[in-house]
Image (cartoon, rainbow, N blue to C red; front, side, top):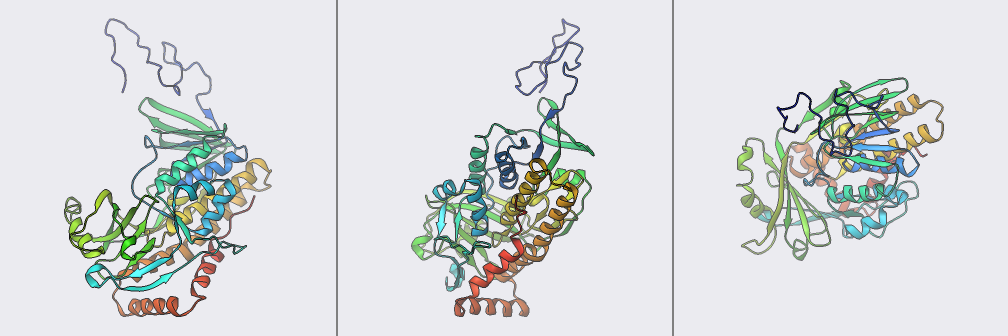
Length: 439
């Protein structure tokens, strides 16, 4: 907020306690001729995808600024599972060991079960632990931890680098570009700030302001049968035979239940009918959990956080607009069942980071063509794998039409009877997703 004006004076000099502010003369003209703070790349959005892309670039000497509208990394319950195809990329940038220490290792796979009120029957267990290309096997099939903890971990590593910068409470407001670079406006509580860079990366989520600034349509649909509720809960699911990840199959009381950390915090994510008013969602939570959760009654649990949200299946018409490039949820959005959204976003960030390294440090002969290839390949990966697989994952849990009943039965039988089934599933993911545009 502006400081109070002293009516006894005809001039007013703004306070200058903001370390990022420009020093002003009394006539309010900036001393500096160029108000634009210079960087090689500006990334909008301090989620895991944006921070991971920034870390990759900064490790190769690229000067990177991340701006984020929030005052800190978002703590909202979101993604929690990181598969081998992503862990492989974490090893390359040196955050894998810290993530292993921070998170909970999934050693027992993903169970498919019925809810408590339908007998809590174990239907089958899936294990996916192949790493692309080398097909190296980790001693676990994945690591679980909250998306916010991953973002904090990446940020901690990035802040060790002198050419990495982050500014919170800076809201992207607009961009202009020409053949030489981009000029960006951000809004803060102390006024507008200006940045110049060679490229702008939009990693600012499904409601991306960067994408909207380029008038890029976000094609697809929003689910209108259920909206999602993500609940962080303290409860000992493991003592009732639940693996680290559980898919609960039911027409109404379907859910995903997964352990988040070593301390015993779990995520219960489920669907609620769109006809239920948002103000009533929390009031109906105990009844929903009573139908879902295993164990003797009365249940003894503690809800730590709860977050309702809408799920989408959408993709940007293109991921590049000149020197403006989209990644993560800014480029595509899908429902969270199966953990493919952030997986795809982190692989986007891997590919885009490597593209920028080639362009800015290795004299890539045709940068525009490389970024166009990034747009084509990463959009194809979403459309042909992530979008299709995540839709099937959701419908597999609850859809009751004859086609999906048949598909569900065949899936469960295949996983149960064929030892190679999970290997084939992992290979299918790797073949489509593993194109990281190596440096």
